[in-house]
Image (cartoon, rainbow, N blue to C red; front, side, top):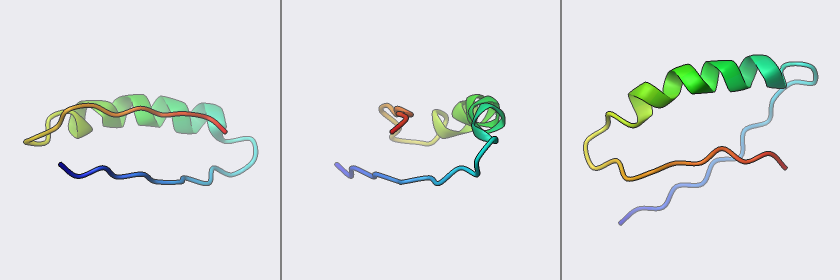
Length: 43
């Protein structure tokens, strides 16, 4: 198993736009062979 953690720095005022784009990207992320799950967490 591989655990990947990524820290994504989002420009000030762009978090809402980023979250909308990430929702679109989820369909591609989840279609990768071997995919189990992912989570997006705000710090």
